[in-house]
Image (cartoon, rainbow, N blue to C red; front, side, top):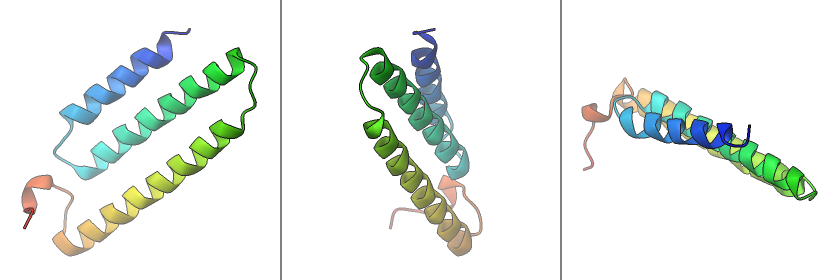
Length: 91
């Protein structure tokens, strides 16, 4: 059971790298990676008998990161009409 979160983390990284067409799929895979990091942190802190205060702070920051990503997604859809990366340029 100790290797399962690491395998899921690597699968999340693979999905993040391979799905570069839509911003929404990249955000979902990024949230999956953050969730697996939280799961590994929670297991690690429970094995060492530490308090869960840091894991709650990590979870709070990850929720803020997810809300920021969704707001960027909504603003991009409003300005460009879709979430394809190929439809807008850097300049």
